[in-house]
Image 1 (cartoon, rainbow, N blue to C red):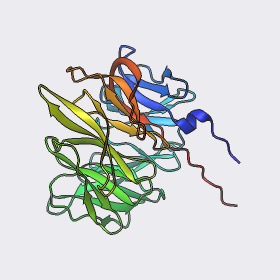
Image 2 (image 1 turned 180 degrees about the vertical axis):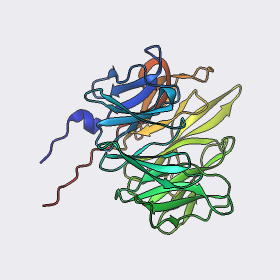
Image 3 (image 1 turned 120 degrees about the vertical axis):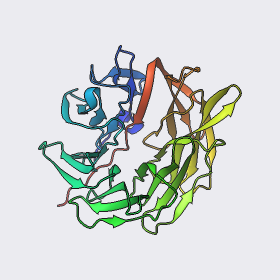
Length: 325
């Protein structure tokens, strides 16, 4: 039987902060309350940390729009490509391949051999792996220019359209951990509504969302049943955000906490019991606190107060792969 260190069960939070003078990737270990600097001089204000499935490495886009692969144990860094800021980076289930979009193509990069190949998909965005590691989900315009969700085998064959969307652009597409649903926001920034789609039946569900219809940063819980997001609200004279969760079919909305930021990224703990979010904007637009709320107790705890913080991601649950005899 394999044993898992307690800090991996509790998870670790990677976040982007300029506390060291420049933006870099930092690590917070909730179990001990300790913080560590992981990168030095490589980050940027737009850097978002993306954990590999095995919790070992973090991918992020940093200075010069360079994609960095950071080993959290050795702190070794590999600089592998140059792409647009805010491009989604997604690790394969076996933590070997990284998928992303560059120059109208889906790129699959082998982090072991450092070879890559491309799948031509003009207008593609938000490419992600299905849990099987054999297919990719992505968004792209159809012949009419409407954004649709598609699935394709990792070798570029058997491309299939999933949605029949006519509601305008789709953003923030995220596949559920079990690969059965996807979520997205639409149609833009000033109005941002969260919907989910059953990837087998094509059935669409729309979440109620917040009072201003400004719902941002939606993320799946590890069990694929719930979604957390930031919902912008207004109380004169300031905007603030509500930290909310809902079921994937939009029938169980619950407000857990609030942040004084217009919007904040959110992230689930590996066990789905807590949510981390940013606060401390104090009218400046820049967060300087990382807070954690228990979804049952609903008592937010200020875990970190530091320089500016722009992004965060809790490490995923550890999943062991059983070798075939």
